[in-house]
Image 1 (cartoon, rainbow, N blue to C red):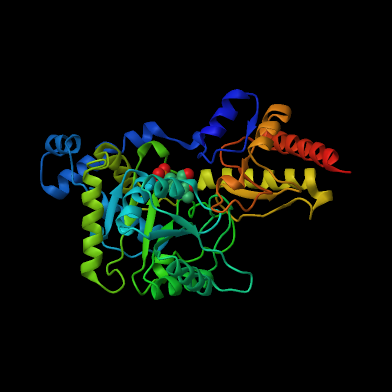
Image 2 (cartoon, rainbow, N blue to C red; image 1 turned 120 degrees about the horizontal axis):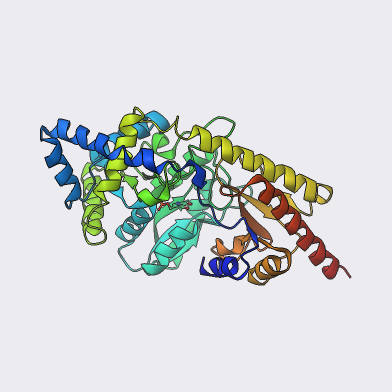
Length: 413
Ligand SMILES: Cc1ncc(COP(=O)(O)O)c(C=O)c1O
């Protein structure tokens, strides 16, 4: 990430497809701030306290596991069909804090490792690295189910004296690839993880940004064995500055209510030494918005979703214009939602190519190797289309195409 920030600073005129930031024109800070007193009034009513006292409580240190858990539970029921009790939820400072709390709580013994799809979100790799925990890819052969791949990966790790404890994934509009896991794949992962007592971390920041097609059931709703922890965030649906996310722990972890309770207690305890509690002011903001919106974000995401869809369409047609004649040599996927797509180029694209592209052609893209756990995916790049204008998307792809042409000419014998 530092490398990309430096590239952006060194070449300020470059059009960037690097950052998956949400589009700022939909940040409605004034109206969201005015939702704080709405939550304050709600809290006063629920507790039977006066309005000023409820306000003073908001400004004080607060409950470590959070104060808007019941509203989050309602929103997850309405928007994601996830049934959970408020007690199952630990409110966190964004999803990133949830990862930072959960990974070391799961991997406590030496030899405990995390699994992830490959490539994977940088945030989980960073958390594991900082905690000194190894993160390994679940590689799947073409003919294999996820269950079989998990079986093979687990057996290999056991031979090395290692035990996989968690499997991180973003099943809906993955960062970095933009892909979706089918319901059959989700069920296969749950079966494999249940068999080996591996906790699935289901991260879902982009699920509400589906442009077309049928939604796939969240893994938590398919899980009968209690192996899925669901991770929610308001960073993309509202804005990242709220730093409000949530971890939903199953009622029974692998069939044990006591184990689930212990994990929740441990996450709260760890959190009490990291952030003490998630800001009650921004929890009140999220809570007030949820009260105003009948505990659903469906209405609020309509406009940004249309914007992301337009950007995806612009990007797809720009890619077709630029590379249509060499399809096969250059390939890309067509995500049905989210913020990202991936492009495969006819040559390896790493740090040197990123700099050449930014310096000589004025466009910045993310090498997929940055997300790869084993240095594969060398020819792929991630394009984020969430926070760019139409003209920039078109010009950026045209610039990328000129770079690809130049590279291919140079490479030709
Ligand atoms: C897959 C994924 N998970 C988690 C996060 C972090 O979210 P938060 O802002 O809630 O910490 C991001 C942010 O880009 C993301 O792409």
